[in-house]
Length: 544
Image (cartoon, rainbow, N blue to C red):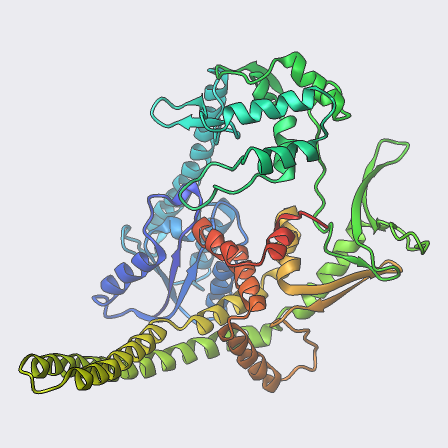
């Protein structure tokens, strides 16, 4: 029987104790070697939470099973397949209709009969219960900690987390500096921007250095967050309730209220409104930036509009406002145009997978040759040293030959390093996988994810006469119904060439693709560290 091997790992709390994708695959390869009736025809790997339906790789696998391309699924545990009722029900239904004939697991025995499906449904139900229970326990733990007077999560600037006592203590290096910032603001003579300049330039205020981040000057937006955070006045807020904190306050509540009045929002902290596409679009008439704005009509209904900032002094811009719903509808039309046609998607994945296999075999042969050359160079160096010790070579002869051998060894080592990975092919596969789910990800994504999608796949955005113009960012391209397989082959080549170039544009694209595919925070930070500051500002929505 033909089987698909499915490996999944979520970066969220639900999967902290689960084997990595590589470990799952190795374990299943070991076990399946003893299953003589099992033929694994394709391996699916996915980094995506199963708490809710909508996993693109999982959905693609079930479509192929429904089409009769495989008879069963191999997985490490049933909870790799489903942790929600919809996906669990789909698996059971496919078993009922005989489209799916068998399931194989490393940690669970399954038989395709009424009792086996009953036990499988119990396992699926328990997996859902585990996720729901974990979420409830985390929220309950947060509520309990707040009720005891302690802030859950990361301490604000000026304070530190006491990991042993699970409390908040003052930061001896920053507490006094942040308190002086409050005092400057209370004088009424210093605006936040001036306080920001004094704190970072004169006082040298830096964020807390952590394992992979920190140690950098605070941003202007961070100054505003500090000056609107009630925590500094000894107050905690949870689920709309105000509770006293047990940490040492930096200012009094009266002082906090005064700062809010100076900021223009008496009585409450200043709240900011985020818009997904602010600073990304240019006005097609005057060239200035397009911004988002929330409007309330006379009935109390709120609407979000995008419009030109109209800051050009020598020109009166006449462009109208555009509702966010209409803007997103046009973005979705663009995403549909750059989405690979279904008839190309599986072909492209198979093409890349075949290329990876071929290149891997070629590089194994090349590696063996280079290793032999490396060993020969090491022997020559050893013999050369012996000749020098025996005074059979002069210093000049020895140094000349030693330099040649050193250069040869460095060249061999560099070529060996280049053979250790096939980055451009793996990235090509990631891009093709992402391409098929852009529309669904945009529809269900939050503001940050929508912004990231548009930055990753689009460029040169402009708005004129309520029409949004978007260019496809390399290596994406628009497709039509008349697109041919020759164009598809050229696209696959272009993608591979684009990623192998390692240009700044390619690095930015790699970062976006990894984040959209749910890569770990460590990879995200590593990718962010290689980006230009202007692109990091785009991702965070700063500037504009």
